Length: 329
Image (cartoon, rainbow, N blue to C red; front, side):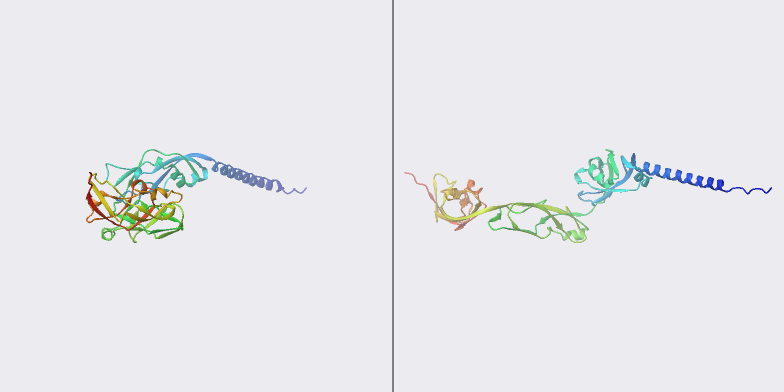
């Protein structure tokens, strides 16, 4: 009787089952790994900190000598990407007032990074939720630089709408700046200027910032300054007023030639004009007469009246003063 050949079907199915089983295990492992890597875990990561500041007499940037250790929650994928926990540099800005000089080392300053939580959160990004920042300060060594303090000159112009005017000179804050560079170039620097800017058709007070300009190769600190301009609506009046004298001793008399004055003034919109026309609103001060080298003195508004005026001009600009004794019978 002939021998039946062996069946290969069972053998093939066994190998197929084994391969399928291995693929299933592999898929399950990948799924488990992906699931775990998307979960958040507590982790501590180390960073070098690069700080930009405005310490007087020093370069604007330095890198921390020590590493900053931050603790927080991060996904497994993020932690895996930072598996050594080192090497990344964080950049922040810190005003000079937050630095404390290290008394043991020249040109070295200490900075407490726990005061810069928001900046550190932005620097590390949304993948790392920081909940621990050590209060131990980091050390930064800054390179000294030559510098010079010079005034800031405005190149801003204010053009108001009709019936509006500047009621005070435009102010810059601060009004001086530090210019850094080599000594030879600094000798020629006497001032820095703002960028040229025209503010047109202005009908209200203004505040803003304007960059400073400096020659190439030099650095200016601060890079920009604040400006403010007071603007208000006005009404212009012209009238004739009788002059009065003030601070004249009782035994003296000051005669004014002429005794009347034509005044052109600007006052706030809606303000009363009557007080300006009253006798005694514009005066000649006896003390001004004594300080004058001639008998000519400029009339001026009385103190209480002066506070209500935006501007004024008088015709004539000067009056002649004749001093005489005040005779009493």
